[in-house]
Length: 94
Image 1 (tube, helix red, strand yellow):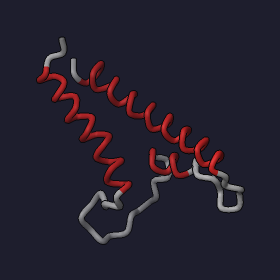
Image 2 (cartoon, helix red, strand yellow):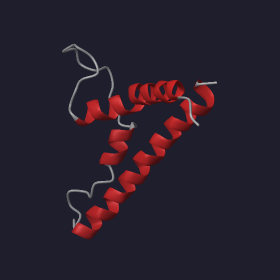
Image 3 (cartoon, one colour):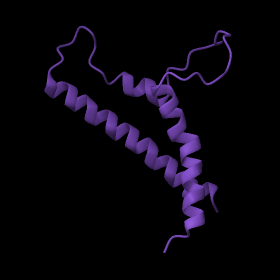
Image 4 (cartoon, one colour):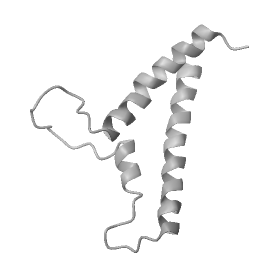
């Protein structure tokens, strides 16, 4: 039987370290309260990797192709989520 306190601790950590960032990015929330220009672009994070799975502008985009790419995005995001949970339950918590 899982310890409810540990489950809550892991839930909060995964929310803070994974869900909050994905949600904030998806909703256009800036990471910082400033109008200063960024010193560099980060195009290596999960949102950009998911975005690159969209069909290119000059590529035929059928419903089947869209679903194929969507399922790749789901798998990629799910894998990142699984890795996050595994890390916080197996390495960070103990």
